[in-house]
Structures are given as structure tokens and as C-alpha cells.
Image (cartoon, rainbow, N blue to C red; front, side, top):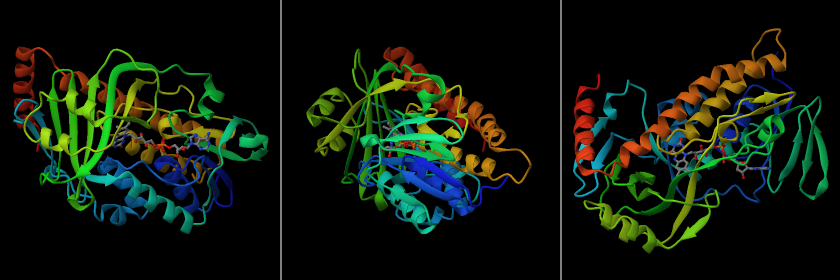
Length: 375
Ligand code: FAD
């Protein structure tokens, strides 16, 4: 089975959808992307792209473009909240030659992917919200306004509120984790070094890292909270609420928070990994199949890996048909994704220890483990 000449419809022009569209187009598929937004505009924020994600971008021929202007991370530094003392340092210079870890602006990554997809012949249709997908041969699509269409192969890269996922396995109920997150981008007036700093305090933590040649800093601040009603990225909050929540933090944190002029706030929810990633003529990828908490910075990296593996499976030069290719894709991806998601979920409590004695002991243990880490 080869994907060359095959018509593929991708739902969603996010990082996963665009990477998959490009990977398939490079193998000769005729790809169109249906995106609900009227423009490809990402909320201004950063994203950490680790060596696994960069490997996919390199394979797509985009690694150098993505690296340009994206600071190369030299370390992950875990710090105690009170005075900003470093507890443990994960030295990223130990990465094998050719592997690196970058702090990328999401808008820049989306722009690079969208331009390359367009140049590879992918048709990106904006303002096309898909309301329903019916798996089958052909796959049925219902668009906003009631129009219907048929498609041969449909990839659901439509994010955490995927409309394809419930068509495969029914509605999924997300659970509030008891954590909310603020996200802001500020000017880099504190000369933040090229490292990801995790400032850990009781019941809360802040991650900071530089963006765009070091000119800006990305902040993600997480606080434990009893209740939340909505899920999404787009809730404006008062910067003073963020400053109040982290008023006990020292080191560089007060200076960074004082620079925040606008901030988004949202509730963090735990989702199950989809049981079925595919059905007749359809497949899920990225957050549509497995939304993850942001405590390991792997959601977009997993979406990039999915995109590449799905394209490879669909283009396998063997006798097996599409169903077998999609089943192979799920088999190759699901266990790995589950491991990564479990690791991300395990990180929050380590960052948020409340009891001062336990916190000090844990920080000591983290420091010893960090020093004992293999070269
Ligand atoms: P999305 O980016 O959600 O894209 C889905 C697209 O589909 C959107 O463009 C949407 O408009 C479109 N769409 C949705 N429904 C429809 C429809 N019905 N019809 C048509 N179009 C539709 N990951 C990392 O790897 N590194 C990080 O450092 C990192 N930091 C994060 C920080 C925070 C605070 C959060 C919340 C997440 C972070 N992530 C990170 C996770 C990462 O952002 C997501 O996992 C990733 O964006 C998922 O990509 P996607 O393409 O699957 O989905």
C-alpha cells in the first residue's frame, strides 16, 4: 500500500495536523486540511521542543528553520520557591551530539509548518468547522452550515475537544485535576539564561524559559484549586491574581510577575488515552487521541511523533490495507504515549510538596539523584 495519489482530509491545523499533512504530502498524498479558525493564529506562548520532536521536524526538513531564533536549552533547573535556590540541575549539554532541546514560540512553529505544507501542495481551508464525522467507506463529513461531504481517509487532529474521538468510542468525561494554570509572555528584562526553570512551592509552581532569541520569557504558573467549570486556553485573568497567588516566591519570580500585563488562565483536566485511535477510514492523532498535562512538556512532541509514525504506516510498501496500517499505527504509539502521560501526571505532586520537612528532604533527594544521573 502506498499513500501516493491518495486523497486525505486532516481535521485541524494545529502542530499535529500540519505535521501529518506535510508528512503525507511529501509521500505524494493529495492532502487538504480543514481548520475551524478563520486564520492560522496561535495564542502567543512558548513550547518546549525536545530531541524527539526535533527529530521529526528534522525529518520533515524543517529543523534548521525551527531552531533559528529558538534558544537552545542548556539545562532544566529545579528551584526552591523561597529564594530561588537551585535544588537540582539537569544538564542538557549531556545530550548526544546532534540532539538538542529548544524553546520555541508556538506561533513560529505553526508558521513554519503551515508554509512548508502549503509549498508541498497541501490545501489549507480556513473557517471550515467540521460538525460531525461518520467513519465508513467513504467517510461522511458534516460541515458548519449543514453542508455534507465524503472523504476517503480522514485524520482527526482536532485537539482536546475532538469531534472524531466520540464517533469512535462515545463521549469521554474529563476530570478536573484540582490545578489551574496561568500563561503569559513577558519581555526578558532579567537576563533569563537559556534554561527551563521550575520554581517549586507549596501547592504551586512556575516554569520560566526564554523565547525568540532570548528577547522574551514564557511563563506557565500552576496552582492547586478546589473547583473549575471550563476547559480551554482563552480565559483572560487579572495579572494581580497571578501575582497574589505567588507572593511568597522569591528569587527572580517577583520581577518576572511584575512585568506581566495580560494573562490567560485555564483549568487542567485529566483525560483517558483513547481506547480506539482508528476506525473505518479514520484515525486520531495528538491531543485528539491523548491530551496530556503540561508537566513534562510532551503534548506537542507526542503529536509530532504521531504525525510521522502515522504517515510511515500509511505509506508502508506492503500488501496490508488501510485498516492494518492504522492498527499498526495505534500499536506503535499507544503504550509509549501512556508512559509519557503517566510520567507527566506524576510530576505535579513532586513540585507542590506542602510540608516543609518533607519538601526539604525531597529536594535533598532530588539533588542527590540529579548528581547521580548517568552521563
Ligand atoms: P491542537 O494544537 O489543539 O490543534 C487542534 C486544531 O484543530 C486547532 O487548530 C483547532 O482550531 C482545530 N479544530 C478543533 N476542532 C475542529 C473542528 N471541529 N473542525 C475543524 N478544526 C477543528 N507540549 C509540548 O510538547 N511542549 C510544551 O512545552 C508544552 N507546553 C504546554 C503548556 C501548556 C500550558 C499547555 C496547556 C500545553 C502544553 N503543551 C506542550 C501541549 C501542546 O500544546 C498540545 O499537546 C499540542 O498543541 C497538541 O497539538 P494538536 O495538533 O494535537 O492539537
